[in-house]
Image 1 (cartoon, rainbow, N blue to C red):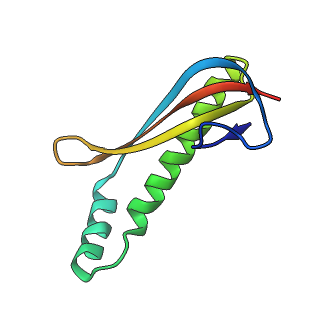
Image 2: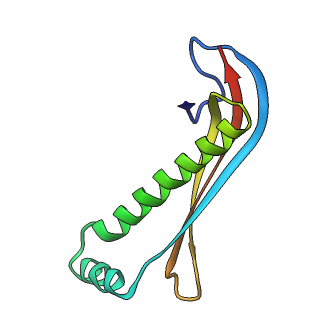
Length: 106
């Protein structure tokens, strides 16, 4: 399945619009990961722990989006938008939401 942030696919013609599809994935960040991230905050640098969680959540959300598009009979999703949010009273959860338009291309 073709998945793109652009509104069209070069060299392909959209022949049918199946509708808007979306997917959300929420992952919890546990105490150990918070501790490791806090050490990174103290010394500076990137937090591989949080980055890995975001990557995993984004990949899961994109896969779910493709599954939902396929259930509608689409073979592509265009105009994808990916959003990230921090949830929970102490910011202990990360949410990735993905939205796009399911289409049939030739």
